[in-house]
Length: 469
Image (cartoon, rainbow, N blue to C red):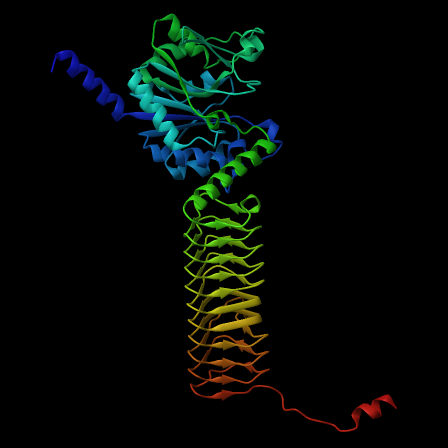
């Protein structure tokens, strides 16, 4: 191995060891017409800046630096817990000024510069662009794409195939405007190039702003190797208003559903179904129209979700049937259980295997045992229900007391609860006990017992005739 080869290898090792992302997220987003900072607007359930940060983390950057400005405190609350380092751009004076705010003098290796309002960029494609940059041994790369209608995007001007300049629309001639290759606003650059040429950028426009696109011209003038690396249109899609925000969500959701269908999930009408990116669904499951499946929900194989259900951060295991109009939030539904129609299961509820929860049943913080049934019109809260328990229609656990504390009801295996029963917690019902219909249970019930707690019936004959007279 020659000395030059050793030096080249060492140079490449240094570059590979240090890869920094700079995310520009200081803009006000006035076109959003919303008090929420632009990059915090939700795309498919998460702030758009979170999509960017999570994508960059999967690329394994050494450091993610985010330039913040408008709504600084709110933005930092979201991204700092994700391991991001923030730098403030106190005045918005253009993209070059924003990059300079990220303290480029402290950078080494390679730097990727991205806009925080571009949530559709994929990690796989960014990795390919970085690999291409390294293979070309470039000093600066502009990530470009070709659009049928480039509109307001800056045009990529090439000479004999080599990138020579980026021309903004307002400065472009009629001939230049015919160019369809555009600047996506994403760059890969060596840190030493930033350190050398970024301070040389000067404002030469009415807005008195410092444009990062001028870095291209400076590098070309100084014989640095500038490349244009073509990527997909997703790199060019920025969110600037509420319409584009909805388009970004729709794109991500459609891509997610497409991926699930390729893995064997059956969507009856995918265009009317909403599924967020982190959702997992097993092969053979059937998802009907008009469903909303959010957060970290997991659905096992061969389950069915009927129309108009809302499922968030829940675990639905294999062979489960979720019937029409059911609302599930942070719950576990075990194998072969049935829930709904029109049931509501609230956080910390667990439904056992082969259990049945019927229409207009609400539960919160309930462990509902294997093969138990609550078929209709029931509220269970702060309760432990054993296996093979029958909960009759109209049953209520009275868990909230006048002292503003909640108490638990325990109903053990094999209990039969008659309709229209109330359990005033704390109370325990032993195994195989029977609760007579219309009872209000205030004391523990021993196993194998019959409990009846209601007023004695009294019949007054002829009473109706006397009232009418």
